[in-house]
Length: 305
Image 1 (tube, rainbow, N blue to C red):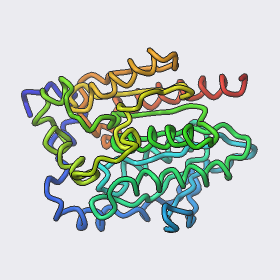
Image 2: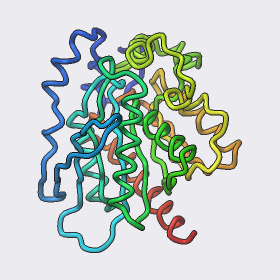
Image 3: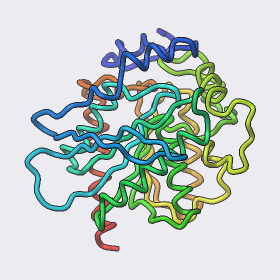
């Protein structure tokens, strides 16, 4: 990986790679498990059974700041993992950070995964979770957020909410989001062997999620193919420099701005996909502080609308 000038703080994760064999996925999902997110001194984690697509029941976490009273904004957070992996310790860490430091109530679901449950099941599960979260939020502001494949799911939920007449989120937070099944960007052609997640793994992800299916509402899987982003909330987009997905975030930002949607964009220099795994790095600390500043500003604006 010496061809990429990765930040030294990320040297450990730059040696990692998402499994490229579907046969390994069940073992990995058994190891990482959703139940390992627990309460600590900063947050209280409670477990709920919430509705999923087609009458399913989903395991969903509600993470709230400890020792906090009064109404809190609600963040509906969708984890990444190529639509095929469960939430990792890094996702748990981020959910807790947002809850404690924004502060907010984070709702965080164990949506069903491809290839056993291909599109539209994960997206529709996430939409069901958003509906449930709106009930919990009441009149409080609502944020939709996601990283990687979770970014695609956050975008899908927002498109579905608009198209189905549901309350729209007040802000959207996306970290190195998946946005386009077509895989035609310059970064997708360039970073064929990048750390953690590359173009080859992107192809495996889309094969697992969509296969040969051509759904009528393809934008719910591949959001960059949406005809319009009208009525979208202000959106924060963060990408990694050495990431096959980088330009998908760039193009999304351009489309939003062209349609009059406030969009803030940041490219994290020296970073690769999955840099949130470096939970103790100064690089991630800087990113989180910038995200929190943006979220607080977006929530203030929502309160004044």
